[in-house]
Structures are given as C-alpha cells and as structure tokens.
Image 1 (cartoon, rainbow, N blue to C red):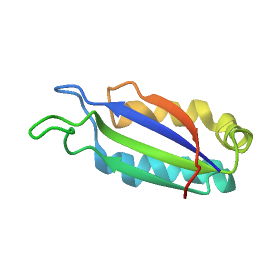
Image 2: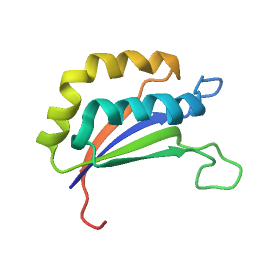
Image 3: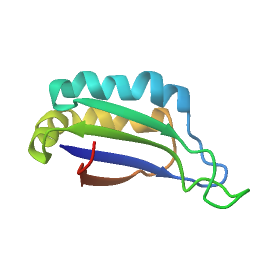
Image 4: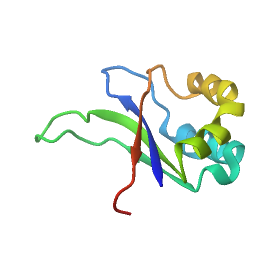
Length: 104
C-alpha cells in the first residue's frame, strides 16, 4: 500500500477554500481515479509544533493506493483535469510525496 500526500505549505494571505477542497475537489479526484484510490483523507492545518505558530501546511490530502503503478494508472489519464481544478480552491503550489505505508 502506498500513500500519495499532496500538501499545501502555509503562506500568509494565501487563498485556500477548505470547503471546496473537501466537498468538490477530492470527491472529483476519487471519482476520476475509481478503484485506484482505495480511500483518501483531507487535513486542515491548525497550528505548528510550538504554541502560537502557524501550521506548516494549510491543507493536505492523502490518497491511498495499492501501488505506485496503480496510482499512476488511475491519476494519469485525468491529471490535466485534476490539476486544472487547483485554481478553484487555492493560489498555492502543492508539494507531493509518495510513501510506502508500513503500519496501517
């Protein structure tokens, strides 16, 4: 099992519509990917590690898939449409990481 994390670094005055991300964008990603996306989670950054600090990431999602190949097969054909939707909820540039899930 792999996890694809898409993270949006916090920036002062950045635009991030959490409701759109949660209610529109991520359900669209799941619908496009079908079974290649086993499930996903959405996080909303609240604070950094030290009291009173901003979160490192304002928002993020984690997409779980059987393998990198399965993820690529599900995401690839729809990448253009999925990436084009980013402008509808943020002006930030996402950071992406693929990890192996070793404890689930």
